[in-house]
Amino acid sequence: MTLGKLYPLKEPQLQFSVGKHNLAIDPRFGLKTFHPLDYNNGRRDFSSVDIGIISTEDDLDMVLNLLTNLNKPAEPLTKGRSSKVRYDGFETIYSLPLKIPDKESDRIISISNSEINDIIGKPNAFENIITLYNSKIQQYKDRFPGRDTLILHMPEVFKKYFKYNYEDLRDRIKALCVTKRIYTQLLTQNSLSPYDWCDDLWNLSLGLYVKCGGIPWKLEEIEENTCFIGISFGIKRGSGGQEILVGLAEVFDVYGESVSIKIIEEYYRNRIGLHLSRQNTKKLLEAAIEGYKEEKADIPSRVVLHKTTFFNYDEKTGVGDALGKINYDLVYIKIDTNLRLHPDGIFPPQRGTFWRINENKGILYTTGYVEEFKTYPGMATASPLEIVREYGDSDIILLAEEIFKLTKMNWNTTALMNKEPVTIDYSRKVVNLLKSGAVPEEILKDFRYYF
Image (cartoon, rainbow, N blue to C red; front, side, top):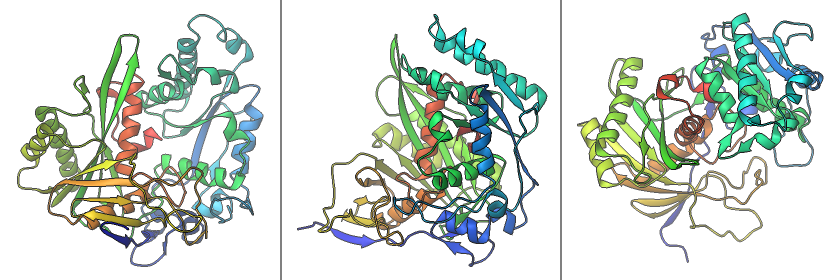
């Protein structure tokens, strides 16, 4: 017996041109068939994707081989759970060239074996790796101060330091690039010899296109003049204990011909739990509304706040202080919930299944069985999101539909389904950078830096 009622939400359509046409639910099919949105609406302001490379001398040939394959077609696996859309090559899909430097180009910065040997197994190896990359990144920045995307290869010999004494090496390297205002693509050894070449090339090509400033798609429809804000928390552990960090991402104008996703420069350390004070909540939301006004010369007609912990009294009061008469909804998104639906067959519930438990609470499957693939294209067991409306007048079904749509706005992957909406995913990326030691003055509002 199921309490409440089940609703099958419609799979969100993505739009690849102006007007109500050139629609697709699969990002790969849409890009392959229609090309990117900014190409079709004439707003693309660059004519090529230019890249630089930092790599060890022993792995450079493999890095160049991977990048060269981006310009070639690749067939999808006949077996497996990924999309069966063929990769046709970068220029064919995105309608502009990918410029790969040749081996002798000064756009390639090499890390020598001797530089590695001077670090590995020696005292302070982790920090010395950071220093090495800092030097190489700055060397590239001095040569090419423009908007290139820098490929950073992380060799297998550094793998033991990826997670080291509460530190994340890749996040630290990414933070270096953010502070230097460099768009980056990190590659590990697994990237150089993927299990599914077609899948890997699709995702890598999209990442490079977006970091160049590209706008690949938008949602077909979502409420106009609505501002979606996501807040995530993270714990930074160290020898002196732990501290709570807060990241925020703001999404708006997803109905128009472009998409703005802003990263707010405020963050807070809070030692009393995963909540904000009334004053800090007010300050954070005021910064978000000011960012909206700067972009659109108006205030939003509605604000939807997504948060990964429940809203306590101080937070609810702080939101009210900041938003005043603006209509708003407070939505607690519980990422890990014990609530489940148990279908009769071998597959999990269909993606988009919403179990409305009551007027303020429901369970949404953002991953699950996909009719187009005739299978569940995930690796782990499909688990839903628990959605709780803690304030506001919007119907819980509308709030679920909006979250479902925002799972399709992740420009860092061509996967048909993502579990989290971009409000949460992007705000978590801010937290990861804060954990690495970045400070607010160095946090940039262009979300492309964070991929």
